[in-house]
Image (cartoon, rainbow, N blue to C red; front, side):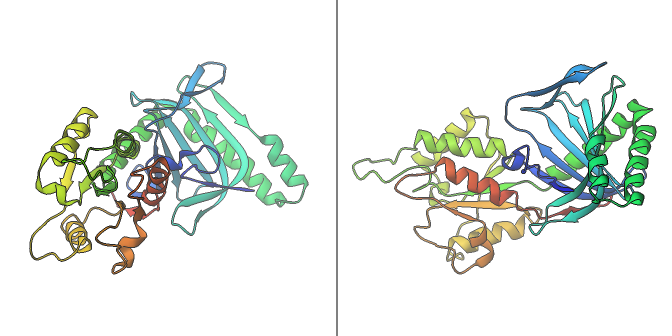
Length: 335
């Protein structure tokens, strides 16, 4: 058996897109849900469906909703297009649900898969892999028969009334997205040494175009809000330039940490902001650490991406920031 993480980082490379997981308990569904939001990327199509023909399965604007219901041996992934409709389902027959060390949900795949489309396609895949695993002694006869039975149940329960299946997935996706709105991914952003590098002869330190491109890419890629922690947040030409550049890139959710004589360090300001906004569970800090190296606060330091002040924000810093933001803190909510 192979392990499949719901971040889809082992095969699909979705680890640099927003990922969420949560527990759902309602009349329609009891179990775990995971959401991958594809904020970028070229379109990938499957073209082997007889009725649906060529369908998109990944690409900018799409999202994957994965449902693992209690009491069933399946992982149901609905691939949504940008218009909010399902293009296809990929349903894995699974052995067990597990939680990785970083908190991300994963399942042990039992090889057999069922693919569905809204046009009525029902495709069973990898039966040969299941048979080979059984012959190699990986499964007992009972486990082998259980996998075949689960595959048939998937067809009977999800494939025979495909419109009801799509409606259920749409309703759950709506609920999941509402929960996500209430728990924004957040980037705490310094300016000096991050978005600019010191220019001794310049009256105003200009923002580096490459650094601004990188921060805008991060905010859009992760659907994140930005909270500025720099002293420039109090106003001035640098602040005006930053807001104007954000506006040009359609980034409007900009906030600042509190300031005043009662705060003695940047860590105090960030912690105060987090206490006020208790819904923020996943965040990253981009800082060159000129005034505060965060050594006094282990929790914040774990969320820190140190930026070289002689270079400004680089692509590798953005990759690290995505990794920090996707360190999963499960959102557990009951409907």
